[in-house]
Image 1 (cartoon, helix red, strand yellow):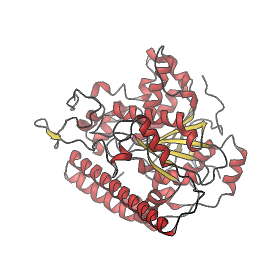
Image 2: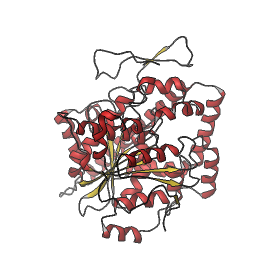
Image 3: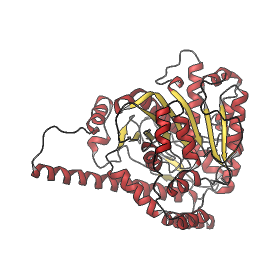
Image 4: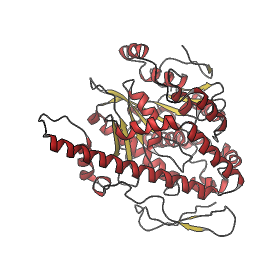
Length: 464
């Protein structure tokens, strides 16, 4: 059945072609050194600042050999991760040893990921302070997580133990330049690919946040690459955009080696990830519109961009975020100062008269948003879509009545069955493939992960 949406534009099934504060970071001599000192006010006052250690070291995996690969060695280790069936049977003793070794590696990796996530949460608490507002929000977050815990356990088991997930593929030499690949079960030909940039308020973004999306899209014969990137305070918005662009470049230039179709790559971002991906897209358009710019990937390789619950005009959002608890002081530190807000606002950047030709290079853009989203109001998407259309870009905004920031990305997928956003995304990706659409129509309903009453309670206590 068609989605319940608020019409913003005429929705073609698929567009055939596009119509026409000062920084609180202390610089170091080595740009590649992740141990650069950072200065962040723990209470957001006007007085002192406290030195904070970097969020992550250059290596965060259990094995230094696999995490620190660079250049050819990195490619070599990526290839080693690709599993191939052995033609020779192994002895029972060696099989047992192999299983024990694999289990040990999985447990080590799970421990490493858990440690990282815990540190991200503690860092967020430290920066946001421990006032009444954030104490209550973290209590709400704890309740929210517990209510959805049955679903998180199943997603985590799939992420760590499924043979269809290739974790931590190296795409660059900076900290956290890794991505996860979610592979369809059958390998009967090249698969369409979604390069996904996760959200996390620019502070706690992590590639594993895309596990549920990756799992469910891979069940529809779509490959997903979840791109990790440096978060604040390990990096600022320029670093995040640089990482996202490099991850997109890796997907465009290497996905065929993993069974993906390089001619069917879709870019997608959620929340802060939607903003970062849109920034990368606009910056790439500006590069390609200029002369003599060196590029490692092209917008012509991107079939479409899907922005989910994103914000694209920071000048309109900075005060709103402050009222919601993402304080102006820390937000401006993430965005490299108030004078940089326009530069990192895709809606404003693309209207710059100096880069007017860049808009014509953008791929079709579809922005999804819930009208009940209080983390980032839905007007952020409708305004960006209208701006793009005025510039001749094939763009549209699709609104989901009453849906919140987490409904579209977590609660609805955990319900199982069909949901509007999932159907719309799959419909766009498979629009030109009649056989894939037929398989989608015959596909069994997605499995429910959490009982309905727990989802309803989680929705009520959600701090987002």
